[in-house]
Image (cartoon, rainbow, N blue to C red; front, side, top):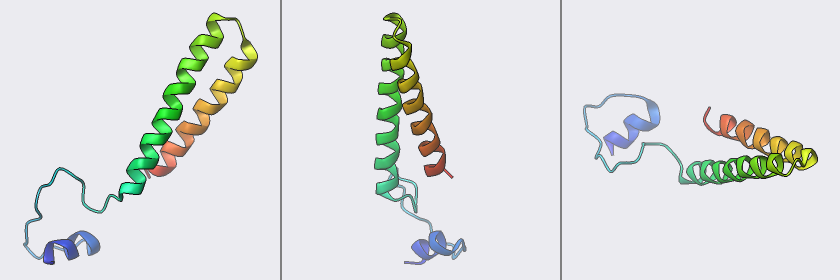
Length: 79
């Protein structure tokens, strides 16, 4: 309990937290959102490459817009 209060309030009761591999205070929903945005970014990168190979600059621009939006969302989530 003391360890959890340390994480919550930034204190130090001297109680070590168990190391379960996860970062304390990092909600699972944020991780899921990050993974979703990374998947969107990866798809946009692939779509950009395909559009460039096909000389389809309209599709390239749309993929670029999706990539930029995903990066912006990632930056917001990581702040």
